[in-house]
Amino acid sequence: MSGATLTRMRLVNGVWEGLLSGREPHPPKLRIRHRDDLVGEPETSPAQDRDGWTVRFHLPLDRLSDGVQTFVIEDARTGEALAHETVIAGDEVSGDLRAELALLKAELDLLKRAFRRHCSETT
Image (cartoon, rainbow, N blue to C red; front, side, top):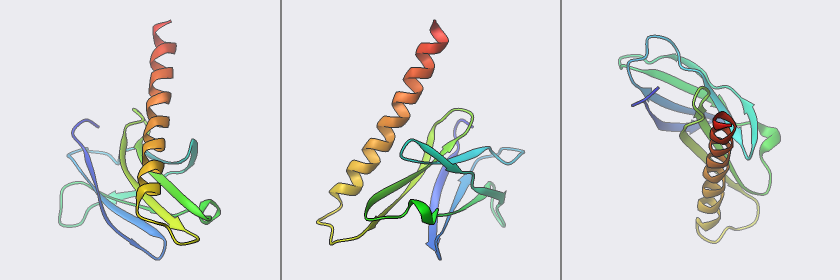
């Protein structure tokens, strides 16, 4: 899915929505990751009045708790992170530093998986 871009549109009633641009003839295979766990697959449907696909997923309620929770939407074939949603809950949070750190951790986890996959393919 090279060249595809997933753009966040909105979060309403616990449903994340985005637009995946590109000219793929079939719905892309996407998955949602929270920390290092797969938590589901978003719904994809042809975008109305646009090229691309509408992507939707319900934030998993069992994953919401105090602190910073980051959900990463990735290409299931390549593991490439296409978008993310960060939810902050609980006591007052000073600034967005915790959200940024959670996103960095999610991206580091993605790099670790890709590196391990690369090492296992070369041996």
